[in-house]
Length: 245
Ligand code: ATP
Ligand code: MG
Image (cartoon, rainbow, N blue to C red; front, side, top):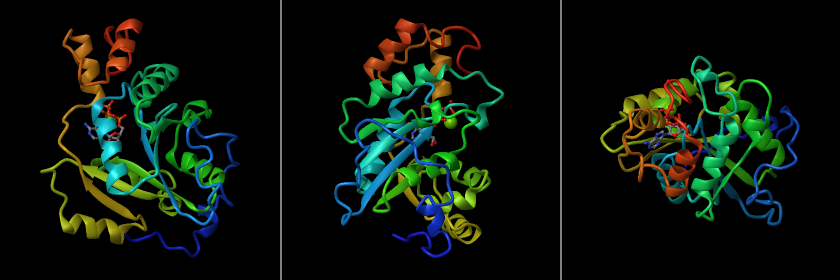
């Protein structure tokens, strides 16, 4: 697997030019890398709005964990997602709660409140800087995202810095063929270390689930049971315009 260049970007990767380190990242993996400095650890970061978290997100993170030998995957619900400023997003605490419920049974998964607790709009580069400043250099960061989002990532604020801070795992569905031309074009256009991974087709999205609830359709089995129960108990998504488009 190709690694991002180790030269001029070393400062950014070590957190030297970044925001200050947070006191804690998550519950289960706060000590990752600290006790074994001679070993390299791989930390997956699954970013998203998770409104709500569904089995597509969970299976995608699990497939990525196994395929890239990740030591852990941290789900990172966005506080105020910049791509969704014009739409109503469910309260951050509820999205955080649902992520915690959905991931609790997987010992390799955890949830971080970092983005939810940070003020202002959520930018991935700020999160990666905070993670880089927190973890020792023997922890490598792998940002997991849908392949369709890769194109927009290269246009994100300070995308070149993101390339220096983390490897990228671009998840595709079988059949959603990504051409070699696209891959080499991406490799030429950016310094990103992009690793492509096909995961079993799961054509569900949070917006589809919100619509299902609103229309009285069932989302049972499309989210974990505890998340289903949480949504029912709190009456989420049942109002038109509540928590989504
Ligand atoms: P919305 O419909 O509200 O945009 P979403 O289902 O796309 O919700 P997000 O929170 O926007 O979920 O996405 C989080 C991450 O999960 C993104 O990287 C996205 O590409 C990925 N993702 C979303 N749905 C799936 C799925 N069914 N299978 C695999 N990955 C998914
Ligand atoms: Mg989405």
